[in-house]
Length: 189
Image (tube, rainbow, N blue to C red; front, side, top):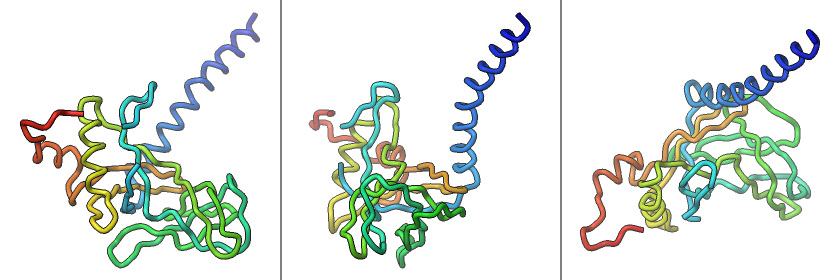
């Protein structure tokens, strides 16, 4: 009877500990992680469990690589910044690397010689239900090629990456929406 109680207590501790640890890791990255700005590219998504979000795509998705890399291969992307201060991938490694500029990524495809396209572990920016549809529209309008005005800041800490903020024309999305209300005759999405 005592053993069963102790096992139940241990199981309850694990069930509470795993989500608590996941939250702790993300919050630590947001609090003390190194900030990278990622230029975005266009993609009204909805997640039944987490709500409305803006689906993000990034300009920085191709990395130098040597040889064929199979789709789905886990890699570690080493980040650097371009002349404008936006994140780009310096290189990827098949071996685990640690640092405040390293993010685990997944290989999408490789050209077999010198480049690999990757998927980031972050691709959704969640907002309150009422703001998300308009934010998605504003994001799409400001993510056109040649007229790029949207980016996100991502904090990276010891291999954990967490989206901090979505910016439109240099302003946090919530501020941008507040300062640029929809035209009175424009139907809301």
